[in-house]
Length: 418
Length: 165
Image (cartoon, rainbow over all chains, first blue to last red; front, side):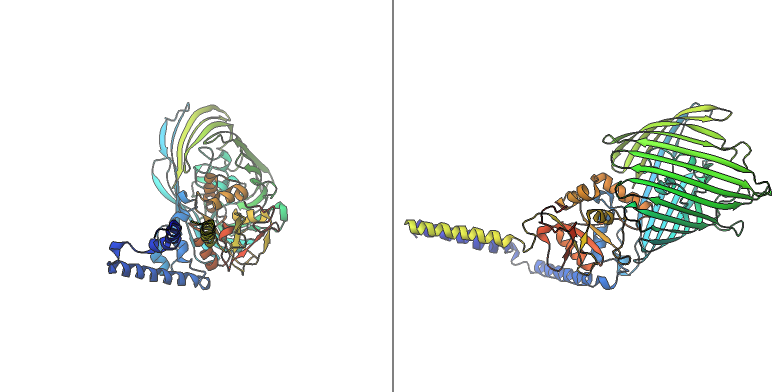
């Protein structure tokens, strides 16, 4: 073959024609490996069967397609951008059993102050958050908290247990134990220190067993949903439950198993998330209950709340005001408890300085929470997100109290989700 | 080698190269755009969404199509162009903010689960076909037949002014 053109032509044919064929050939040594080929063929058959099963998935919407589950460990792992950890549940799916998703939150703290209490290390709430979708419209949510109390004894609390019916965007019904939809903070951060910018909750939203004045937890029914309102982005909340224990402050504060009376607490709220202002939310709510303390008084409790918050990538600005009014039936005398907080923070990379001022004022002769008294003061701190899922916080606080010396102190915390 | 034969040889080579290039191109009507297409099953009751509606869907603010059919979000894994475009234009969040947003969303009981992660456009299209109400964002040059491409603000991928690019 003396003609160079022929040589070139043959080379081109080899390049464009034979290369793909050659590349598709098995390695020379593998030609005799029949066992490997058989295994590969079996694998192809398995995959074809899997694809057929997936194609049939629309007829069985109650069980998620297996391919979704196959993606789930990363779907849900923080590293892949999901929201929940979904353990390997192929066996459960094969049996048609709903799978369960877990997420954990916890924090470790240290605080020191000029108060007469000694400085101390402590672990905060160890929160296990569990969800399970039973079908397209039914799901279960649980929030279990393990924490130590003031006596150092460790206990377990079921903070939330909700059986949810979610047929559409406009009506979602939950039954069980829930966080009352008063204001913003309580239903935004629940029992997660990591999600909060600061080390702790505002005084106003302290939990009942921590001396809080609001019925944070309730057992009953809760309905939420969107209100067709276009750009206003309106949502509603309607709740009915047992309300807070009132007979004695020594009793468990949440009426989990037995209500004291036939009267039920009700709560209604409306909030707006305008489409033109992503991250902004404003809302109002009114809560009503009747309380029957051992003193024999019948007391009407009304709680009014309003909030305006902005949580965006540039900054956070939370503002909430709550007014509790207790009216004694027999004398018509009103006791009003005003409380508010304002909090602002701005991220600079992984560092987020923050500032909060809070105020709460319970009258001396109030039938409830008189021990809380007047408290107010600032908190200034800094949060450093050293990982996407863990943060270190250091804050200074000053708490002014009626008839008592002010307390100055430092709190520091490592909080995380897992 | 004569000039004539040389020209014929070059033409042959060019033809082979062009044929090989064409063979590798996907047969998509949006082949030239490189935009990110929003794809659903053909029976999904939507054809044209505003960017605000797309944002509502992806933020989990709107979780059903006509009040009945549940929306299932399929989002590509991190470090893919599809995900980057969605995070930048629709979510307006960083990767970290996106993850924290969905952790909070589920924890607040505002959604029963976060988006499903898919690892390839093929996996996304397979799942869209399999799961009624699902929605995925894939490279417009890789949209296979059998899927509906939704308009955004009246525009399809490849059209001037299309939002997801």
